[in-house]
Length: 512
Image (cartoon, rainbow, N blue to C red; front, side, top):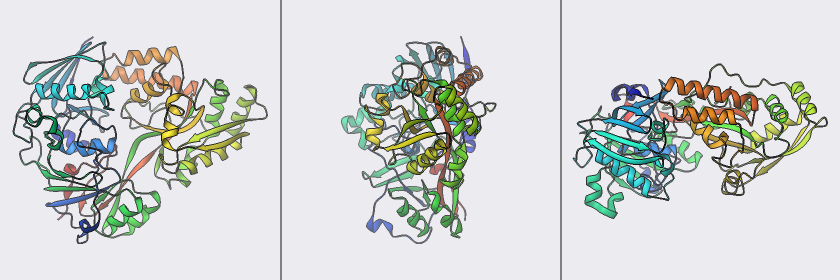
């Protein structure tokens, strides 16, 4: 099988696909600013998340990817407009079964002035693979060989045909081999990428300062200096924005949206998030070993009530197993309608004419308003004679070997972000991959095997859609919603939010 994908021009990508990046915070004397002083000289982001370290591979979270996107770039990025992948440091690529051939961008320099070549990519990927503690390592473990055909042609060879490799290269930042050779074990104190901003300074759980890369190969950023500060508490971020101590904030609580919108100096930006919330119904446990019970739960639950009353309308109902803004979504799939009569009939047919008792596990410290959401779900299930006990757990317990990842929870509320349906399907529904949800369906597995080796994106999407229809019928889960990513922004900052939990400042302009 042989197919070729041409990447769209980087300028078009930047124009069409604004992503997001977040930063870090310092307190006290740092907060001396006049009201909304965002200018072409300086912009400040107050963020709930900071860099965990200066190791570019020592994390796996969308907000931190956003921070690194300022300094270092990957071969490809997600194009949210075309729902595919766009070239960044790769201009085009060709899938040849067990080989991927990347034509790299020419005329690109790192911040230290060294030229970008295939050797830098290989150096970066080898470092990622050799770090056995890196949570990003899984993405590249299928690669068995990396070699440069020349300075700007890279060949990756995989164990098996791996069409989804292009997805796994998203967010794998490329750093300078020349800098690594120069600084050795101290290289992390000198982050050297090709991005639109250069590293200046960083304090752990504090402040990150970046300055514009005036030699950037693409469009030059409009703002000279970016300061990102960590502000962990929601109320403090909102207060900082309203007081003019920050120009952009992330994770705005729904109850504070109206305050920001009423302020003449601030506004709210929203984007449909890609964290998909659902109820997992583990088929290895009773009563969820019965398909009729699983379908009954789908008929009993109405996520529209949750979005309206818990999230004040800031959410998007999922009609299928993945959100509408995820690669592989099927617009023809419709969710189970709310039908309590049908739910009771199915439960009776499954052998539960008097209803049943279940425990619903949740992690209030991980997912926003999880307790309130699950209380609504319990109330809806009560209407079909399902008596639900809520079991709240700290995330470390909920997510650990005695919880979700150990396959110990029969029924739980969870959220998982993905830009490609393959990510969710692989981790939750494909047999033998994880214990999170021990669903087994040979027909579904066969479709996933095929899409993961199919280089034709249109055919891949068709296969993912077929797999999605199987999931909706078998119902090992109840799809719920994605939530809006909500940002507070100073009115003189021109920026439109898009999915990804990131605020990329090089997409911003300042209104004069």
